[in-house]
Length: 136
Image (cartoon, rainbow, N blue to C red; front, side, top):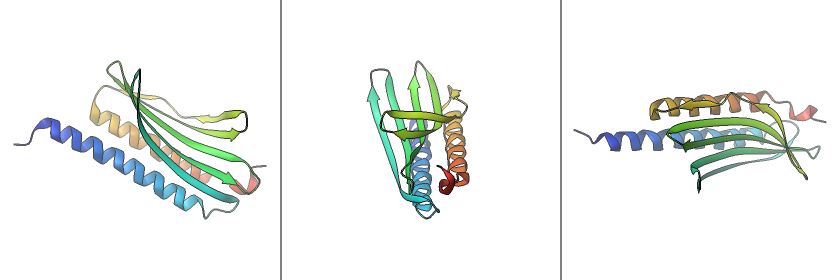
């Protein structure tokens, strides 16, 4: 019989690695879109005073000089898993929020992984539909 902790650990690593792969693929596919001059993916797991945080993004620069970020943030705080995602325009003074997707919260790891996948799918869908040629 398998240790339940191993099963949970494995499912967490599987879920997180699938998100990473999906964002890598998104960054790669966006490089070929009209109007895009570059795209990169970032993926970090950090430890803050409030707890562990997964920060993932795909940044896109356009030929017109604008920059956009598809951002995903997942964290564990006070016994709650929280997943947030958004689209932002990046500029010299910081970032402007363009789209904030629904915040997803759960207490179970399985539900957290479902939320993480849903939020990632939402980001990917919005990035693929974005018209980078007409961003001026």
